[in-house]
Length: 165
Image (cartoon, rainbow, N blue to C red):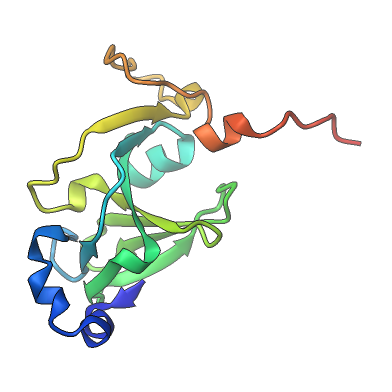
């Protein structure tokens, strides 16, 4: 991620001209604000235990290319390692109001963004459910006919691992 000032310096007046492509978002109190200057992935619903504990329920996240995400205000932004992440990710949140904002895996070209932190209109839609095998026992999965993955789509494509020695 880069700060908005760095992006403005690199792009000059193009930052203003590309207003139709810039999507803004923020935490609840405004101590973390960001802009995405590029496409967003449709929303994935993650039911994994870690997301449920982090968000208080399942998570709804979009994603942007790392270079398209610019921080406008980051005085409240803090990062914590995501302790059970297979991707070695960290999670970004606002230390002032507690809003969970980002999921950042270092080897991926994108940063996930909590969809509820985006300013409307987002023009996004829910695309799939991940980690349905870890869904909470207090809710039923919706009958929305969207794809469901027992794990993540990436984990399901991995070859099966043999028994541990």
